[in-house]
Amino acid sequence: MKIEGHIYPSFVPFQFPMSERKMQPSSFETRRLLFSVVSLSIFLVFFSCFTLWSNKGGGSGSIPGLDSLAAPFSYLRSTKPASNIRADVKQNSRGRKVCDPAQAKLKVFMYDLPPEFHFGLLGWKATGSQTWPDVSDLNHVPSYPGGLNLQHSMEYWLTLDLLASDYPVISRPCVAVRIHDSSIADVIFVPFFSSVSYNRHSKLHGKEKVSRDKFLQDKLVNFLRNQEEWKRSGGRDHLIMAHHPNSLLDARRQLGSAMFLLADFGRYPVEIANIKKDIIAPYKHVVNSIGNESATFEARPLLAYFQGAIVRKDGGMIRQELYQLLKDAKDVHFTYGTVGGNGIRRASKGMASSRFCLNIAGDTPSSNRLFDAIVSHCVPVIISDEIELPFEDVMDYSDFSIFVQASDAIKEGFLLNLLRGINSEHWTQMWGRLKEVACHFEYQYPSREGDAVEMIWEAVSRKSSSFRLSIHKENRFHRSKPS
Image (tube, rainbow, N blue to C red; front, side):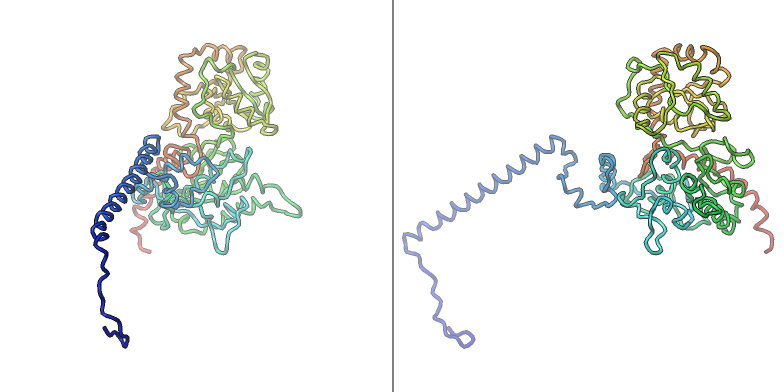
């Protein structure tokens, strides 16, 4: 045979000897049978292992380790406990409905203020023209200063939540969403971290004649007054955060037409801040949440607990009077305390060991002590006649708190007799309600259904209807006039 210039001998099939030809079919069938048996055995081994793993809680039928490969959600990289976050990721990866801005209760337009007004105050450094940090990765979210600074951090959590609404993969309640067209917004959000600004920059340094805090306030007023959004409503649809009682001290009068988010009204004239237009937001508790390890009535050896500053001015002078009345009671802890020297840890343990926790007016009507008591499942005793409480339009605090007028509290024996007269059954009812509502006072990121962030947005939604009504009424004839 000739192929491309080469001469090959004609092909002749190889002939097995007769004996081998008779044996060959039998040997081939044997090998096929052996291969089938081995394959079946391997399959059965893998099937048995998979079934055993599933029955022991592998759960969803997924193989450990595949979730992180199949769903690379960068925002999961966190030092926080991963259990709750992982659950949300699985829900998202299985087609959990993403928040539709059209279905949200509150459409929020947020000014892109320079970082010096918000995360720059926390030490965050922007890159280039960057305005906001990447909140899709928890490792890159700037942290808020700890200690007592944390109690006024609601400005931080709300801003993070709005930024998170730009990332559909982040699981969060569909109450408030950030939009980028102010003409269709329900609320205009002003992302100024006024509490951080006051805590860190209200004092003069070196040769400064104007503090950094006052400089930012003046700059904010000038900015807002020149915005079309402010001019359109006179600022009434703007949401401004001033949770620290001394924050926004210089600018609050000029911005008083806006809706304020406050801790209380203790240092505001009624024409600047009032319950009709403004919202009371809870403090961020500084003690640890007690979780499921909540002691019962019998397991709490202390009747009442108070630890904090005793010498106060204004309405807080009642603390000194109560101290004299209660300091010698054997089952009452009433002492001076600070956050230093493991003060927070001692307060956590003390509240968790007490049936009642005293929330007494100080320099202002409110304090974070109330919210420390709630997350400790220690029934609050509120002695503050001028206090305004978060979410009280939808929440009855008398279900889980005791209210005592200041004039009664300072009567000899009144408070101790009142608290000792509350039996185990009555206390346990309030304790059970405390365990139900504690979640409403938790700030967290990403936010969760029913937590403090969602509750605040719900409160803003309820409050916003009143200023929208007044704006719409004013527009009845305004738009029909010739320009």
